[in-house]
Image 1 (cartoon, rainbow over the protein chains, first blue to last red):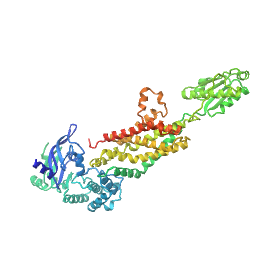
Image 2: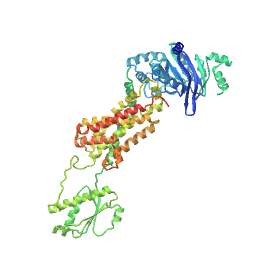
Image 3: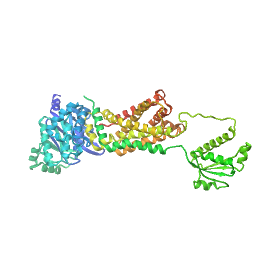
Image 4: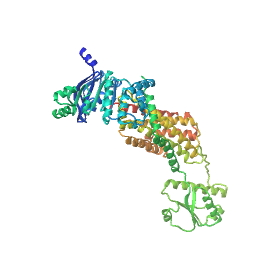
Length: 251
Length: 367
């Protein structure tokens, strides 16, 4: 009992046998893993491997068809309303309003999370200083390049100061320079004690993670730190680890 | 924690104001519909082509013809004598009716005997045919009174017409037309409000926030209420002025009722939007669900009392039925709240019902 409580306090995400079926198709097949608080946890896999389905279940957007999971100490099947107040989420598709300015988007999301106007202004000033959106505050979202849109989405998901941030392919469609600076942001966030759960299919990005899971056809085929994995496979890059792992582990 | 509703309302207002093209459409489409339908839908008949076969050829018969031609209703296409092939006449649409004046017309009139006029009517448009019959009856009766000082017969009915003394069709149609346009526009306004966010992916971002379905639904309906209300006022004032339909009752009361009715349309739209998976489906559904019942089953054109029983029951769930009763009552008869509160209560009930169902139907988890 005491152990269980300790577990709960240590891990931001704790998943056991999590499964999601869509009709006959099993998108996520009984995966189990834990993410410690303050960790940058990477979720790797080809398109269709089940990354987005997993992240949606963890955020309370999708109900699991099997297994269980806890996020921020709350059950993902029954307490998802509580989870929502503790997490930030950035979907893989840009999902803010194109016809609103950066500031209008930010104010809207602040309002949605129940922040007062002054709180939003104060919070966005802090975040803009880190993320660097100040000069674009009055621009329409539609007119921003993808890299800036993603920063804005990140900013919106951080307004309510969540403990855990889920980023679903945050850098897809972003140029290499912007990708690098986006990851520097992620590091800064992790330093403030936030847990980062990030999916990607860029293997160079996997190197930035503390630990990562490689998914193939709904199952986790590797779960370890990047250095360990490279050592085990005897290769120099995560790219090679990934290719080897996906080729070897037949499901 | 603060409610999310103000944030949603504010965001929707920015959406509305920034999309100038849609805003222009929303404000001009009702006016366009009012003009098109207003001028096209009329039962007032004018310039019916009539041919007169005058076999009498006397001052008396010419007097009758003059009387017929002096009305707006008839337009004499030809005066002739002798026998004609009626079929050819009607088929070529030279006339919609033919009046035969017998050879002994003048003698009958002078001697005070009954004169036998014959009226042949093309009844392929039965409505027009019955109008022609009535109208000719009136014209000849007047002619008779003018000549004899009295109408032949024991009884005479002296009708007094209330509320619409000239029996024009505009005072009847325009309030109904306002009801039709208003529910269509309101339902269209909100029909894409939610499904648009599903399509663009912004809904997913809303769903991971702690915002409640009730806050989303109410936050979306509120700003459009103002827009729909403005539309309503525009067509009410324009319809009243252009078609000469003065508002007998209180303008404020019509406006208040309109507000309730606009919300009915908006709630219907938001329900459609909540259920639909694409914007095009939502818009089509909103159009079908409002235009057809509001036009056919609300008493807008066809009286509910002459419909089959099942349709009569159905008309009781069509919001336009109630609003048409309300607006006709206020505009034509000068009804006050005492005569219309029942209908208003039903509309309010429909509003609450539709909003509640929308909130219940709103899925906060993806499928």
